[in-house]
Image (cartoon, rainbow, N blue to C red; front, side, top):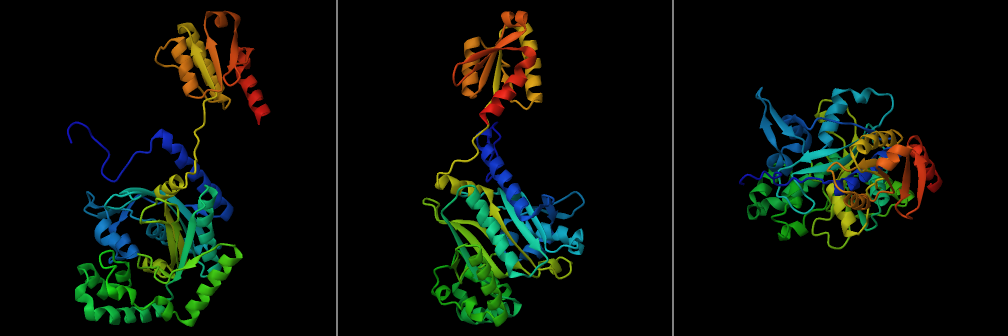
Length: 428
């Protein structure tokens, strides 16, 4: 690597020309979650490894292949969080949020997750997820609300090419019946499948349908569909979810092969895809579903939940593909140019005064000449420029120059902030 230390593989820096986009998305998230009454929860970046083994499932690829796990100095096994739901549910149980009078408890989180996987477009080893969890209600209406929140976020940033894909994974009874059918279907020829699939047959045969290696095997196409094993109750639940989505005017496509990769999902499962051109093979922007046993698995009382998680990186990628511009950076309002040391001292005070009045201001810190400083003011998109030299120091007044029109007006030192504030309010 030589002397140049670089960012680790699968990570990246968000530079100032990009961070304005992130800030706009984060502001939209907070605004939307307020409208829907979801409250923010912030959990630790690392947790006990056992949480993810139990909460995500030890047959999943995430747990078997993708986690960043380490021993701390007390010889405890800790893991950087690979997803958000398990941590949120752990906190829900540990802090007894199931005891709050108002259920469901509606939460959202946003922050970095870590997975050791092959980096590719829109998939990094450290990535940022926004997710929502509504815990404590088995009403199909809350499923529809959670889905509509996800759709609304994509729409509010300007995405149009979206496709919502829906499926029902059924309740435990339906799942067991389907599982037995899957085992019967794959078992006679399981030796034609990869070693992962052989393990999955024992532990979680549904995951065979998710296999990347064997996806073209003829048995995949003829595998029994979950839809045929839904009992009456599960079917009725799914119909209600669809009814509420219809009520919200949200279009969806039913895909009987949609399974979520984590063990704890049942009933509603959904993904939101991007149909934008040039997105590549993996078009999923967001995935979620209902989990009705997870709180119990982590030691809490029966509290059914539903949630989703979306990658902010993939959201940005979709914006790029649809050529939607967001996060135009805020331009500078006043650039103060000082011609000598005495003026510079005064200019420094004026800048503080402007900033105290909520006006963005800047000056030169490299001792450049007037012409170079004017160019800098231009590059930074300054709305106004003030030049300070001996004349201005003597008169106690400056010429406030409006860059767009070239108009100038003479203003006393003490009135600079007031004058600009007035001009701003007139523009608005």
